[in-house]
Image (cartoon, rainbow, N blue to C red; front, top):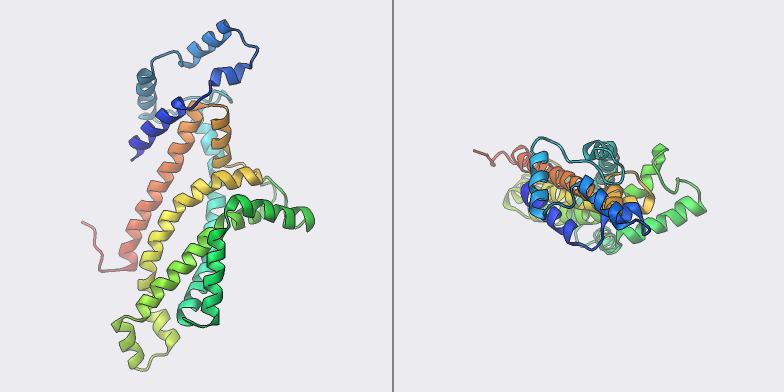
Length: 292
């Protein structure tokens, strides 16, 4: 998967219009200056040779040097990576704090007013894109009310607004998923038998059905981790959050080939690791699952 991501990103970033050397030197640069800088950056070599050099360096952990910052790509990524992990982690935590009680209450009170309210709000959350929610949150809570900073991460409370913008859609998806999965478990024979033995509704839900209902929810959480990382690209740009997503946008705008490749490779690697952890979590939630 990582090799496929490397190949695809390398091909696409070289095929899109734009010359990084022209961007770096400006419109007034002479042809000799352009040729000299291309030679220094290795951009005058055939594309296959550049690709082979990229893979050979990557095999030893060298992602090259940024054209714009003139610093190692690995150092730039590691300086921004913690901010993105913080944003994604707080967004997922916020989404879970909202979705788990809402989904459980909607499943237990299926067909009643609480269920209809939770379903309607989750549908609304799915319909609102983060690039629209972000500016609205800034206008209301940062500009008019002055409760939170507009951008940056200098203050601890600066993470609140971007986390809400990024976690809204995830909370909506999780709420619907938890409700659907728990409704199915509550209707299963072992829960019906537990209720027939005299156990109360909440006792059946919390002791018997809840753990089994979380298996498909964990799958959604693992898949949505990648959505959080890609969604962070837009959210970090809107809120001026100094993370990996904003760095990726800046690298694309300046045609910084090594930095774009390094950022997307790190996002892909994180996504694969999260999915691996998700697969291993299945065995904890369901003892019937065994891996050889």
